[in-house]
Image (cartoon, rainbow, N blue to C red; front, top):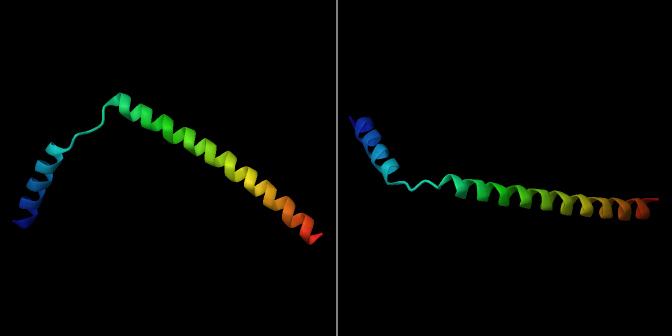
Length: 59
């Protein structure tokens, strides 16, 4: 019976959740994509710089 009570409480808690609106989800998705693109370029540039430094030092 504890599992039935648990599932009832889960259902009750899900009813209290305030889900984001469609526009909010779209906005947050755009922010995440922009940050991922920025970080990709940033780490790509760092990788290229460190690769050249190591190549210079090694030979």
